[in-house]
Image 1 (cartoon, rainbow, N blue to C red):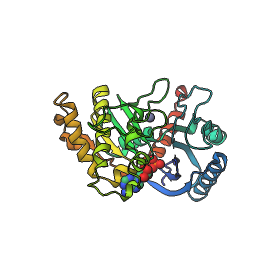
Image 2 (cartoon, helix red, strand yellow):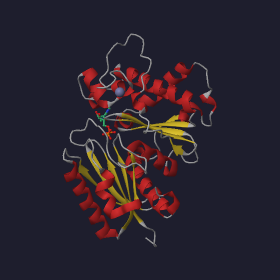
Image 3 (cartoon, rainbow, N blue to C red):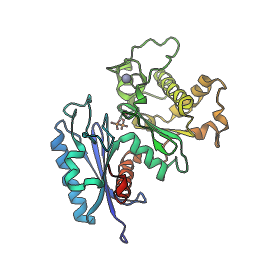
Image 4 (cartoon, rainbow, N blue to C red):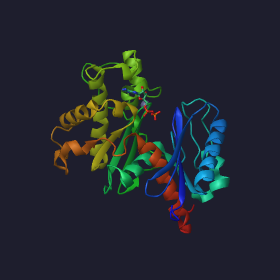
Length: 310
Ligand code: ADP
Ligand code: ZN
């Protein structure tokens, strides 16, 4: 390893956690997946055991990054930094992720959302290299957006939840959607469970010619329209389980975005045109786990600059 510090990352997902050990250049030395159970302390202890195994194999871990499903408190100076908020995931509301790992890692712990992590990984090692303004959209169990503006993830009093934006519906489509808060927000129309509820069959069983994909693409194109007019990103990456398994969606989103913008803001003129503008993640399905590694790298760098510690 040539003195390069060992970094550990955990992508905490709704169904599984991916733990990995690697280095600042994005090299992965070891990786393991564990199920995300309904008892957080049991799952977190299994993760801690896995990290200990990594350390036994590769040496002590210099920093830990956790890229988790949200909502999460991300302000370093908040009393409940790194704590999960009210979530639909049974058992996990209020889970203190940072508290669990704080004694071992202290300031060398970085916690963020899975989509912010993935966006940072894409900026460092993937399809957003060299960009200061871009969005990483995941379409999986939910719809999430890691939005980067002026080289920083956007964060207000809370991290944004752009998967829940309400959008114009496709003409003639009156399906009420399945978001339990908003019905037909983008997540309620385009996430895997929404597709399954609407069609009555798992999305994986649907061919590319199924009519639902136009409805899904429309909702995602409307989300892209919102992103374009709100922060004018240089690129929008679409990843997650639904997108990676249904690559035809990308071209449909491009066509519907072009229609929706109707010539306003000439995104075709960005370098590479619309093809490069609406693109898959460069890291593919590794964007999430590598996001956790990126958070670890950032935590290590911040811990070396004492004035940045809250
Ligand atoms: P998570 O959001 O929990 O990280 P993923 O990004 O892996 O999970 O996405 C999981 C979703 O992907 C599920 O809702 C599932 O229905 C959907 N999915 C899995 N395979 C396919 C497929 N072949 N086509 C479309 N959707 C799929
Ligand atoms: Zn919603």
